[in-house]
Amino acid sequence: MDRDDAVASAKQHWFRPTADGMVWAKSFAIDVAARKAEALARKQIEADWEAVFLRKQVTDVSTGVTGEADGLFFVKPAHVGVHFRESEVPAAERMLTQDWFGPRGVPGTPEGLNDCTAYVSHCLVDGGVAFLGPASPGDVWPTRSAQQIYRLLSERPASQVKRLTDMCAAAAAARVFEALAHIIKPGDVLTFAAAGRHEHAGMLVTVDAATGDARMTCHSTMDHPDLGAGEGTWQIRTQGWEHPFVSILHFSHDDPAPPAALAALAGWWKVMLLGTKTVFMHLTAGGAAAWTPRKPTGTGAPAKPAGRGHWYADAAGTGLVVVWENGAVDTLAPAPDTQSMLGTEDAWPLLASRDLT
Image (cartoon, rainbow, N blue to C red; front, side):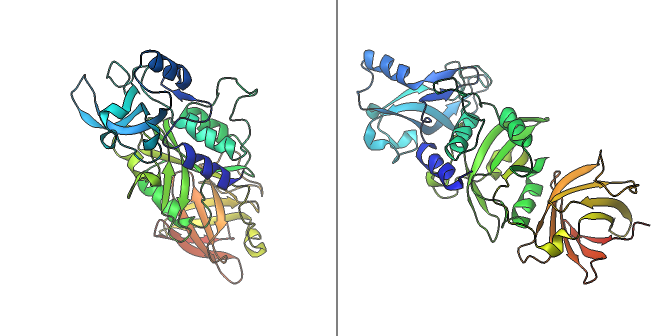
């Protein structure tokens, strides 16, 4: 994957339709060229007007609740990439062609905008990620739901994609970003879920390698740091009931190889949490982690672990950071004899030992 190309694609299309000229609603594709032809035939727009998304106030007519979301508009070219809100474009220089909820103004209707995953998958394909776009040019774009992109990326081998978290709480995801600030990069994907189902997708476009502060982009509703100060935060997608849980899907092809001294820590460890709870953790030299409450009977990884994760060298290259899919983060410093490790799990004390008795 070329991360720069994926991010460049996002910068070009975060405020407008993807290069295939399609915008996805919940159950069908909006053909932008066909919509433009219809509007021209009705003399509603001029020939040089272009399709963009604009932030606007939308109302759920079933409840009367009003909030900010997107509409798909045609606007005069002077506004393209310059103005991103309906209020910034004179009424005579814009035309709404598809509102956020669709013409019925009610959440969940088939006409509501739902372009997040198609947009993210376009960016990834532009970055060279295979098997997300159509098999043949001109075919319908196949990767259109957050559940789908989560599955397609999760199924890839760890040498390509590592699922760092799996529907964890936002606070836990924030700890993972901080712990792996030197690992998580632009181009990595976030999906947002509720009730066990992924409902929204975004792609990271900036990550502070010191703090883990990250900004993302998405459609429906459109977002990107270029929208303005404070925009592009992934945390805002977790607020409320709609999709509060986060999965971090990390492209691992450019991960640094762990130092040999840390790779040598592969194998089984007895881990005592708070001096009371004891579990058994297995690490592979390639970076996989698993734990089980039962003492192992062999040297291999457990077939049915209680939890899975991945480990990395810390930023200094001397200790381990183990990130579990539930969002827990272990930081461990090996003793000089490499027979024990001392650290924390989410700030709680941990002691790991090669002695499994």
